Image 1 (cartoon, rainbow, N blue to C red):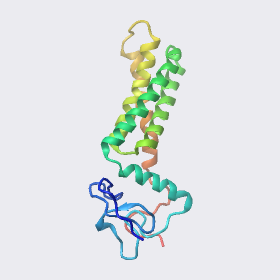
Image 2: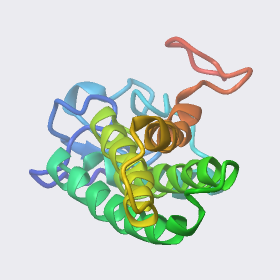
Image 3: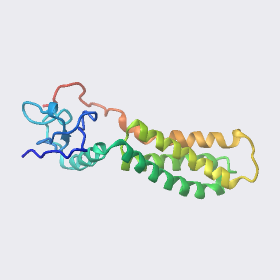
Image 4: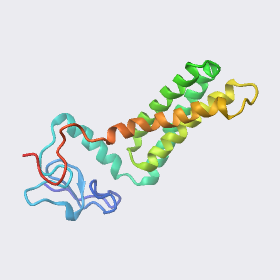
Length: 187
């Protein structure tokens, strides 16, 4: 049975196109051009997903179908909340050489994971995660230092927090070892 898509839903394989229906094999939203002759869509290629992957695929397709402004707002809300918590937790450790770098890295990675979970892994969302990873470290330094010591004290943790916020999404984008690439089906 084919279900018709609401107006705001976009094709998972082609986000610039509106979705016309749900794929009968995997349930992802697809555009009218996407239907394959034997059934399926451009993403699943007619191969039914395994049960443990189907829940993840459904969640990702729901997030990918959201309009970009909504995903950016979700990313900003989660990133801001975690940046404030990380900054407040980290202000006690800014004068320590080890924890002054380890804590922004951990908080930045956590921000990247949380933002990717609620808003997807698109480039604008990654930018929001990187900004809030750096904001967390900067907030910790603003709360923990009595005087301004120059950019050499606060810039490395801020950059480390920003880079670590990007790592979860960048690690996810790499194809798995042995993955089939190209337009052929692994049948």
